[in-house]
Image (tube, rainbow, N blue to C red; front, side, top):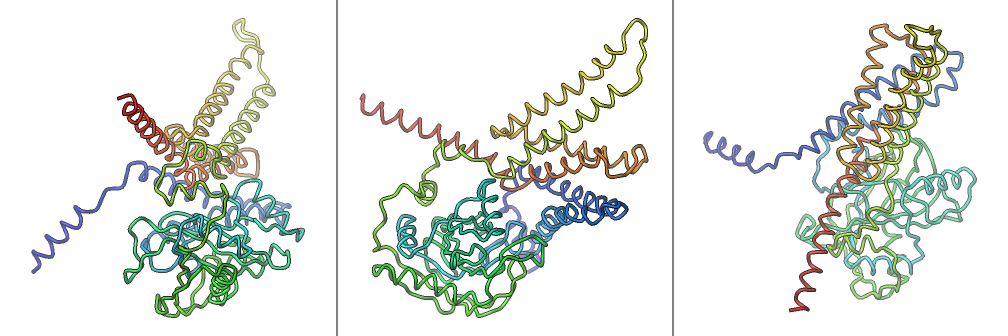
Length: 458
């Protein structure tokens, strides 16, 4: 019996596919970035309390802990104990358990979009620098923003495909909203039921602080079943062609907390909207999602038109940290007292010392330019250089080569640390790797077009 179990275990181990080298590299840099950000948060906190500006410095300390340190710790720990298979819960981008999956849809994206539009729902915009700023302004000023972006939730290992929302009385702090994920080809619910979309609907009651990450976020209403029923009834009332059936015991009723620490309860029922008989709207909206659900490859224009915020932040912060280092070195070179030596003027010596600084800046600019064109090697090189630079700064502090205080050196290390984290995020990695997939899709499309052309000629 033991021998059979041992053989079964060997077979199961052989069936496991090894992780790609790129994934192992990303996880390694992710771990390095996590260690660095914890070190940075501790250093800034200690130095901040020693400074007369301690109250003001609490803001960057909170920002580092809330948006860098705690999410990274949650991500590392949740990868160990949170299951990576479907069990009716979403996950936040930090790996925490998110909102419950509480509805499903049968139909195409065009039919889903038409049904939501007829019911008075607005499609949420993607999170970009512009929409993030508009969201902040609308929240502070109370100005209506009916297409405001929603936070990222994960299901099937990817973020939601589309989200819809309804503001309450023009107040951006209170809104109905629901996220949808298209199910993978051939995927079935537990029990064997096939659906095209899964959704998670919740009602935002106010803006508050997350109990788990200390980030500013929306708080949700406790009874998610009320919001689930509201979404379903709004669609069936607006479109008589929409049908509905229910899986009353999809899960047992339970109560838990989502990624923001908000308590919620659910009875475990899963309503399934049938939109197969509804009519789609004549609109070009949702081309990317339509391509996803039909299995078509996205066009090069769709893939290249926008980089994620993390990728832009990584490039900007890398250039900023390098420029800051170059300015500090240049000032030190031209303020140092130098004398003529062996017929070489002090100005010539300064220029020679300045050459490596200029080369360093130029090399980083070229690497960042290559990275923003989705260069995979340049991303790895930049992460390596940033890791070594931060390590050198830390060793200088540990070995008393440099005094530990709030100065330009610590500011540069902070920028480099945040840049390294931005490079190591999943969104940046997926964006860079997508270039190879896009090129393969483009080559396949060209080959198919050539074959069709040859058939016509033949």
